[in-house]
Length: 291
Image (cartoon, rainbow, N blue to C red; front, side, top):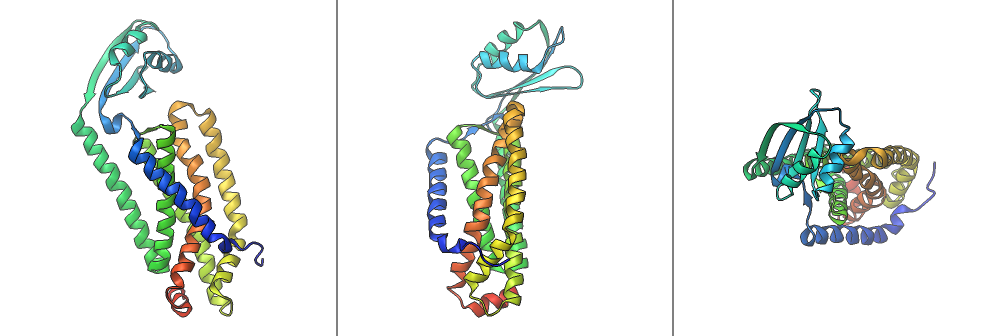
């Protein structure tokens, strides 16, 4: 398959789009902030056992009608319900509304303090930084530093925009969402590595072509794979986002946004960055690095 579309010819437009999205995300997080869940803010955990059979949707509705904005309801195998309510929310009102469903036994009531939530926050940040560092080392080992930095730039670009989307919609950010962000990062890198592998292969067999042409050729050769993978992942995530319920919908939001942004960065951003960085050095150096 020969070049059908000159992706890198539009790289400055893609840079502009990426800059707008990244700067917008940073500004949103700085000004509007994130709707941090109980994992990061602390709060109250209630475990209750109703006297009759109750559907979990009734429990969610009762808590929501009490004016509680950030909460999580889980059903256990023992037939009890665990209700987690963020610090500062109307816990007393939630209890009163739950009595309207049926009388219940309060099995336990615990408060997650600031010390625990601060520890969870530190662990979440450590997990993200460790993952990013590990990915950079792997890419630098496999493709040499300039290629690794290009892929890492695309990865950070994706994660920042997804976080900005959570700030814009003010969806709750909890440990499950952090896990989803790490998966989005892995998806983005995997997609980029496929394209970089093809570029490296074509640099070996098409030594007479300019670097930009080799990159465009490689992107076109892997385009069908990229589109098929992205579309199937996106459709699956979208269905779960629409029908998966409150908790699953919140997690799937990261995938819905992340797949779109990750595909864009893999095709338009990562390779473009490597191309412009390679022009700082010589073509021969880049070919030597990828040999």
